[in-house]
Amino acid sequence: MDITDLTVHELQEKLKNKELTILDITKAYTDRIEEKEKDVQAFVTPLGEQALEQAKDIQEKIDNGEIKGDLAGIPIGIKDNICTKGIKTTCSSKMLENFVAPYNATVIEKLEEENMVNLGKLNMDEFAMGSSTEYSYFKKTRNPWNLNKVPGGSSGGSAAAVAAKLVPWALGSDTGGSIRQPASFCGVVGLKPTYGLISRYGLVAFASSLDQIGPITKDVRDSAMLLNIIAGHDEKDTTSSDKEKVDYLKALKNDVKDLKIGVPKEFFGEGINEEVKASLEKAIEKYKELGAKIEEFSLDIANYALATYYIIACAEASSNLGRFDGIRYTYRTPEFKNLKEIYKKSRSEGFGPEVKRRIILGTYVLSSGYYDAYYKKAQKVRTLVVNEFNKAFEKYDVILTPTSPTVAFDIGSKSNNPLEMYLADICTVSVNVAGLPAISIPCGVDKEQMPIGMQLIGNKFCEETILNAAYTFEQAIKFRENYNPKV
Image 1 (cartoon, rainbow, N blue to C red):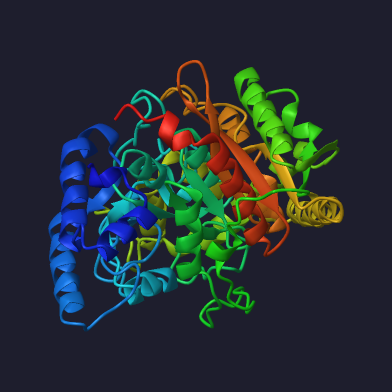
Image 2 (spheres, rainbow, N blue to C red):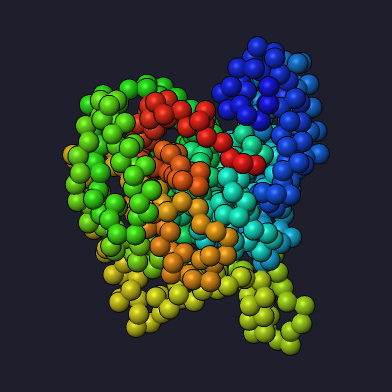
């Protein structure tokens, strides 16, 4: 038995039956990281020795009856823009290369309350800006299905680590598709929860009105389990919802009879790869077989949601990244003559090209004379996007689309063409603009055996509906049993 093949709920069962110990599980993962990390390049800060010590300590406490809990000792990987006390949080940027967070993000506090084991901080596009994890200052993460392909981004390290079995599950963050798109490219499950369901306290901000932490897992059951742990109100986050706690595992009924699924025709038009389209059409037929009611409809937001997203995201990024000035806790240029030069040279040397591009664009749309023409107008269009979705959810329980218009592309093929890279997010950004929940699950592979992702979008705080729809489909096609990454 390869321990790293198992899902978290399978690991739980083995622990309960005393077939495995926590140390067995953690050691299996640290050994796998040692063997495969050189190929995949998923970690910025691996915590192998520390993880083993943590596992020993937790096992002792369990044996002594000091701690209980279904997830005690289960390992996890963390995206490197989520603050971890005493451990580097770099955002994969030179600007924060040596930053050690003095506190834990709320989600990390929740994991520690469960006594989970941190295997390390995972690579990402710098400050979460990118769709391929090629914009990391430290390394380019590779796709475990084909090491010449990108894993997607910005949570590419998290998705690749789960797909390559370097971690049993991971936390990512999603601003415009940064959990779902890499999950699609790497053949795993990625959930972007409703805005406000999970605390953003301790998440290094990219675009505050769009960012959301969420799980990346091997299957849908694990996604529901991790969501149970990290969801909930947090008084430290003013945008946190005080919605009553839900047990998302109870939502997994393996039944979609009479579920109303809307299929927006705009998401299947020009620019969608033919193999992706064919795979999604098969998935739609499978849902019909399972008893769901499918209907094509028009969701006329695709044309302007992308532009709206990039205006809002870049404007908020330029504001949020203003704090990284070379004066406080960030990178400071070694050579300067005056204060102005510290600012200019520290930011020029500390930020990568994609971050600079977005700061410049964001500053431009917020500047005097352009604010009304761009940023204010984008906020008005945002309201239209919300209204369009509200109208759709009066009729449908779930909206089904591709997660990405293509499968994973070759490393280097789009990194010099920002506009083409931005178009990789066309199917996902509207969900963040509207603050909705969405999940990406694998629905097939193309002729090169690269995974294809299907996105299921739900109404606000309807995670139970999309989790059950995803779970029922997953049980029907058994993707993990039929397809595996090469690594």
